[in-house]
Length: 77
Image 1 (spheres, rainbow, N blue to C red):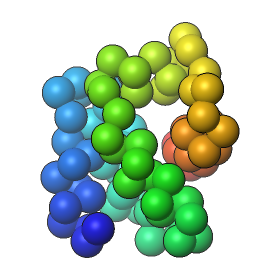
Image 2 (cartoon, helix red, strand yellow):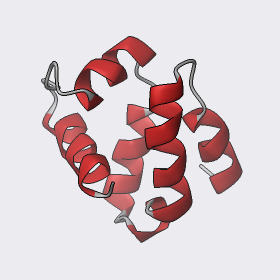
Image 3 (cartoon, rainbow, N blue to C red):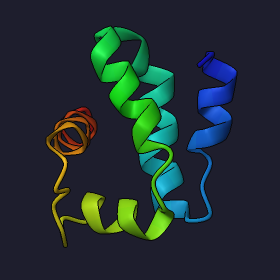
Image 4 (cartoon, rainbow, N blue to C red):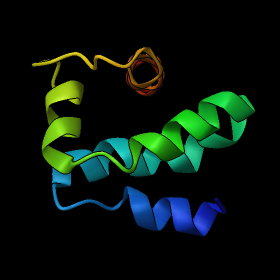
């Protein structure tokens, strides 16, 4: 997925998610391995409420790939 599409997909219905995802795409995404970039693209397909719960650490993803990319995003902040 090209960077403009990623930035557009990172703009969510919740300000909290926008403040996490958009800077990540702008500053970190290009440095990820191809596998982690794919994980991020899959993450963007998740529902906003689910993402919010994961980023606020109220729940953990069952999928280890999603858990990995969430940790990468949170560590980059």
